[in-house]
Amino acid sequence: MIEEKKSHSLYLPIGIQTKNIITDAYPDAYPMEGFEMIKRAGFSCCDFSLNDYLQNTSLYHFEHNDFFSQSENDLRLFFEPYREAAQIVGIRINQMHMPYPSYVPNASKEFNDYLFYEVAPKSMKICAFLECPYIVVHGFKLSRYLGSEEAEWQKTEELIEYLAPMAKELGVTICIENLYNSVGNLIIEGPCCDAGKAASRIDRINEKYGAEVLGFCFDTGHANLIGLDFEDFITTLGSRLKVLHIHDNDGIADLHQIPFTFTKSRENISSTDWEGFITGLCKIQFSGVLSFETAPVLTAFPAVMKQDVLGFIANIGKYFGEEIKMRAGREEMPK
Image (tube, rainbow, N blue to C red; front, side, top):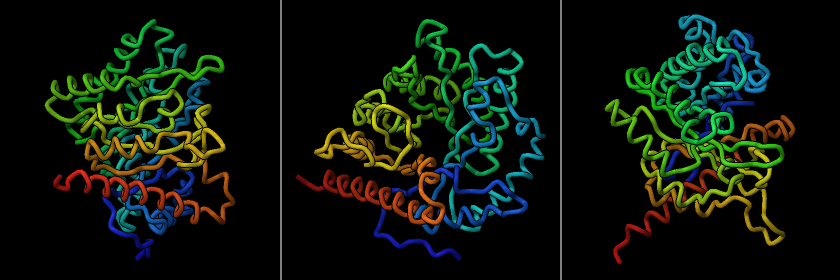
C-alpha cells in the first residue's frame, strides 16, 4: 500500500497529467511505479495522456505512426496494465486528452479520414476501457481558412456529431477546450474562446442526444495568453465545465509551468488571474478535479527531484481546494 502525503480536508480532488510520469516501457517496466509516484505526491486522480501516442508535431508534418491502426482488442491488451496499476494504487483516471489535431489543414483526405474515423473513435473506446468519464478534444483551427468562427465550429461539430452516439453509449463526455491560435508572432483567440457560444452549443447538442455527451475543459494557460476574464468565463459556463487544465505562463508563450511562476511586474502580481479562477470555481460550485497540465516542468528539473516537484504541485492544488472550500463556506453563512 502506497503511503501518500496526509493533508487537511479537501473540498476537491487533485489530479496531474501522466506525461513524463507513467512509463511506456511495458512489459520491461510495469506502469505501477508512475502511479505510485503520483499517489505519494498527494494526488488522487490523473489526466491520462493519450495524446502521447500520436504526437501533434508529427501530424502537422503530415506524418502519423500506426499505434491507432491496432485492433480494438490489441489496444485493450496494451492498456490493461495501466488500468490495473491505477486501480491497485488507487488513482482515478478522471480525464484524458484525445490526440490532436483531428483535422490538419492541407493534409490529404486519406490522412484526415484516418484521424477522424480511426483515431477519434478508438480514443473514445480506450477512454471507456480505462473507466474515464471525460475526454478532451481540440476544436479545429480553421477560421483563417474558412473565413469565420462559425464555419470553423461547423467543422468541429461534424466530429462531435460523429462521436456523440458513441459517447452516449459509452458514458463518456467529450469536452471542448478554449484554445489560442498563432498568426506569425501574434497570439490570438482560437476555437471555443466565447463562453456564451460554447454554453449554447453544448446545451443544444446535449438536448439533441438526451445525455451529457458534450462538456467543457477550461485551460488556464490558454486563457491567460489571450486575456480572457477567468471569473466571467467560468461562471458563464456554469455546470457545463467538467474538467480543468491548470498551468501557468508569462502571457507570451504556452509554457505549461507551475501556477504562480510568472509575475507581471517586480511587485509580484501574478501573470495569471488565479483570484478570478478560484472565485469562478467557487461561484459555480465546481465539483470536479483540480487537474494540472504541467508535464514540461518535470523534465526541467533533475530527475531526482521529480517526486518533490510533484508534491509541490499537489500542495498548490490543496491550496486551491482549501480556498474554494473556505469561500464557499463564507457564502453559505447566514447574513
